[in-house]
Each structure stands twice: as structure tokens, then as C-alpha cells.
View 1 (cartoon, rainbow, N blue to C red):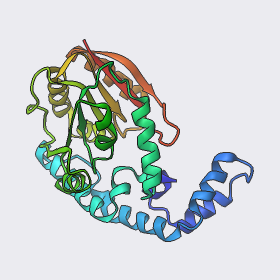
View 2 (view 1 turned 30 degrees about the horizontal axis):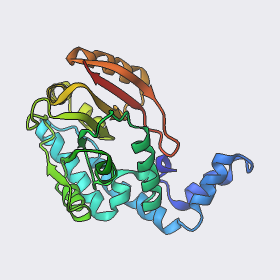
View 3 (view 1 turned 90 degrees about the horizontal axis):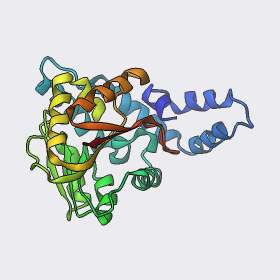
Length: 262
């Protein structure tokens, strides 16, 4: 359903598509249940997508322009619907987003001791807040000033900072055990190989030996073979590839890559 919304499908178009599916198919039956009573919400989300999707790209004449473009997109999205801005599949519903967040937290490759953790592309802080009880420290970074402001409003006891989106140079060496990038690496990838390399180098320097860079969704290219090839190539930057493109979640179709610091 989120993919249909991202294609700007209206509620009536979504219902019509669902009505054309076998009535006894469990997944489609569940989607019909989600659609019931959500016509206004789905139409509003589709309208928001139509208004902003033209800017849903990190591409620009320069890397800085690419980051500015995607930051502006998320500034607008979070002002409209904070939950949908970080996960369209939540349909703007906090309960759906909370359930999906809990799935990610339970799946993460937690170290034996509470980690020092970076939430890269933290959005409204939903993961930072969920991770904090299990962590020694959590820092959330995002390119969007609007996202950082919303995260601070929701979770005033946690640390959130705006990042340039160009690198991770501000991180202290050997200061982290876990770097988590949930749906943020696709924008880094869109911004070009040099931006990717700077982020990988920064993560490698900041992670302690045995720490992990966890990337949930590597790109939006819809090319699993290329994503895997990229992840394998990145291992030359001081990582070993531990998980390569699995889909471990029930509520979200994100692909998982775990790069372990050598």
C-alpha cells in the first residue's frame, strides 16, 4: 500500500486495485482492512507525495546542492506528517510506526555490553528513543533541520544534531560500537561515490574493532545485484560483510546489510 501511495494512487484507486484481487488472499485481505476508514488519510498522503516527490532525490549540480534538496524535501514532509515522513508504510499511524520500530530494535546485532550508538538519518528520533534504554549513549544525526527540531521536541533528553550530509568527520575515533542507517544510505548513494566513501571512512574510524555499520536499505535502485556488489566493494574500507541483502522484517520490506569493523 505504501508503494501505491508513493505512486500517488488515491484511496479510490487503491480500493479498486484491492477489489480486483482474490478475496481469500490473506495479504490482500489485510490491506483491505488497512484501507477501510482511511480514505481521507490516504488521499492526503498521496497529495503530499505529488507535491514533494519531485524533490525526493539527493541529486544536484554539486553534493552540497543534493543534500540541500533532500533536506528541503524532509523539512516539508515532517511538517505535514512526522510519522509518514520517516516511513510512508506507517500511513501516518503512530501505532504502525511503533510496531515497525520495535521489529528493527529486536533484530539489531546488539553487542554484549550496552553500546555507544549513532543513529544516522535519525528523522523524528523514533529509533534513537527506542535504542536509548539498551545503549550507553545515542547520537542522532539528520540533514533536515525540521527533522532535528521534531526529534528534540519529542525526546528532549536525547542528543540530536544537524549534519552536513557530506561526511562523518565530526565523530571521535574509536568512539562507537554501532552505526545504524535506516533508510538514509539511499540518499548518500544518490549523492555519488565520493560522498559514500567519506561516510564509510568516517564510520570505519569512529567504530571500535568489532563494531558494526548496519544499513537498512542500501539504495532505491531496485537492483539487488548492484547493492550486493557495492556492499562487497565497501569491505575494502576496513569492513567484512556479515549480512548481505536479507529482508528480515515483517512490517517493512527494507533490505539489511551489516558491515563488521575488522
